[in-house]
Length: 327
Ligand code: ASP
Image (tube, rainbow, N blue to C red):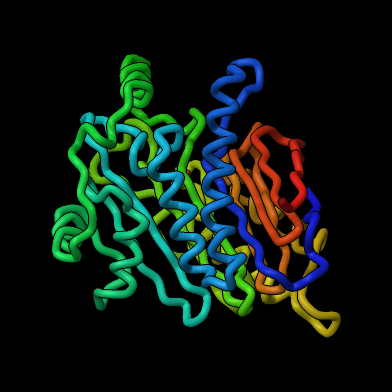
């Protein structure tokens, strides 16, 4: 997919709400409308910050927060269940200015795990904290807590029951995913990335995916780009996916300048194809420090959107464009 808006150097925002088997035939108009509204609300929230000259970091956190609050997506409210019927959430945020980062895994009670990830970055000496410690740190930071049933939805419970009813006990990496993420370039030229997820239905033994791992599912570096991935985390971990995109973009910058438009898209597509060769499905959103907002995925669809001062667009299925001009 070529970038529609790589010519100027204004702010950019891209978001995703997961990738996977998203068949047009099995989605009702109401369902599709609700998903598109959720994506539009997140784009609007992030754009409002960038439009006023705000920081990429604030924009990606806010866009993720909106998607975490929307039960359609597998993050915050609406997170998937573990094999044991609990909810364990992962999130990460990264600031491209000095490559500061914060992340949590196995958080169970923070209403907005992306806020917890940011608190780890800004108010702890650590980058990644887990489980009970993450919950404790969240309370100490005074972040909003939510009871267990706030996060639980019927549709996710059914997905677990269906998964458990199938023979074999491997978790399900073929269902549509629903993780959320945001990447942005602000008008000061800084990039940031955020990703938040409940992980994968039926995960066991404290499993951690790519989303909270810096360099796998989340990455931001002002010298190249910001990346948020979604898909079968085990494969994205093995590909060091988000960092690989960043490194390839950085190394491709030569005398002629950085790779732009189709050239940058080809790099993203190549790294997604590498995950595919390992056997993984999913995709990513990427914003380059020089102004390309890109999508790449090897699944039937990816819930996604991007915005710039020129307008915004939302897509679900491969080949969707749906560009909406600026208001
Ligand atoms: N990548 C996430 C994980 O493996 C799942 C997703 O993107 O939906 O935990």
